[in-house]
Length: 109
Image 1 (cartoon, rainbow, N blue to C red):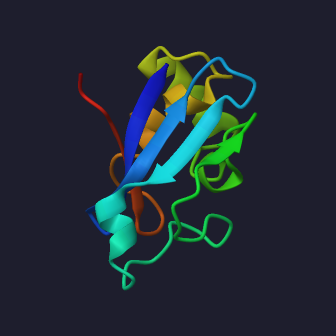
Image 2: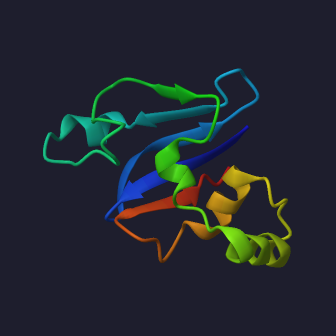
């Protein structure tokens, strides 16, 4: 299982988890972030609520943060990550310089 924290404008918003269960991906807002009604949702398809979002595939919002084509090939080769490892590439590349307000940081254990 791999996990990362999701930030919006450098404010900790929630946790994204990848596991081997049928719904391999889960996203949930942290209570502290949820309680402040002025905080925006990470995207329109994941409104700000206490629901746990689950999907068998990486959520489209996060998938769209990934590089494509030759850039993806280059990232995978340089970072030593399997080209098909969406979550791994996201963990390695979405910590800085993302398009938009959302960044991803691996959870240090």
